[in-house]
Length: 477
Image (cartoon, rainbow, N blue to C red):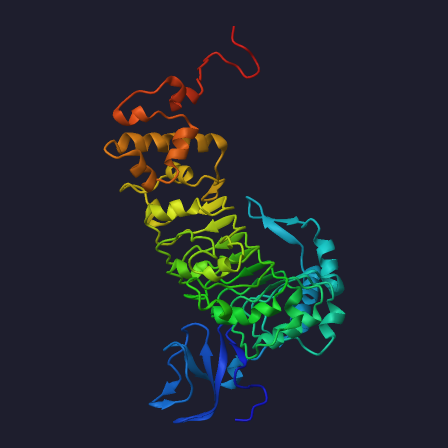
């Protein structure tokens, strides 16, 4: 079949009005045995097909999933539109139709139409009609397949700084690079739910202006991220959610070390790896030398345990010490670590968080260690065991809560480990001795002794009086 509208590797969308978009990649062009006419073999992004590329024992193409392939008539597929066509359709056409339509209205309690006017609507429509002033463009599932003719988008929309292209038909990173060339002011780009071929290790220089890149649900692995790294010299926020990642490929120069690592990404502050498939903390440790990383999102993975390693240059990298180099502190700038919806079940993982030098915000909800009952962690225990914590599960840890939690925790240990020595308690609870001294908690509490009123938590509580005759703004006589 020599249809000029289709080519292998091309991204297409099923023309199926009224249903959610069905997007895939062309894997075969030609005839199908036992069926007349021309067919397009498509591998769909999800399991929305009928087979794996073979029909009646004949293999036509390969798919990654057994139910992601199907054959479709060419007339049932859309090959998409250029970026400028999509922008024009989305903004100029919508603005014009909105201005010509009836007034907006709401229904009254008597089911009567009451006209309303959207505040600022005229100004928004005016900006939309003038594409040269457009700064934020949202084109989700708009069928964008190319940048279009050279210079066309740059001339029409030079001011775009944020572009959302979720669920479009871009075939590869070359086309993404062309779009970035056309939009010199672009800083934020969302390419979620795309399948972008990467067949070149050469940097895409046009991507160097990006500060935020979202690649959720793109079937990416870290090997591709490593290739893109050289093109993302200014990237500050990178989102890689729902990519089924299980491993992080370390740089080749560190591959012989006990703890190989990822280098580069010098400006990266936030890395989002939510809802992937990481099980081993050793994979995450490969990110520990990212010198600017402040927030790491790992919600919805399968992590069983976490720990904080010794500074690099000791043990696993003895050559650095022999050369007189200073050991490298792991995760030196990490301030926020989100670990919700994992499989953490041991106290050593909680204690390890206290060793992160800059860590202040943590999420641990929906882990076995935090399930109520069965002696699992309660909030006060976690707060007491992580000394620098200022936010837990999205809730601020105030100084008063910290003090009360630490006192309660230390007293709990003394009263419930009466047969243990202080050194044994300290081994199992690294912060215990520090907290006992800090809050002046006597050792005789372990032997059933009493504590003075100044050491009781009740001494710090407020006394509330009930005044039944009190009227707001007046003092009762």
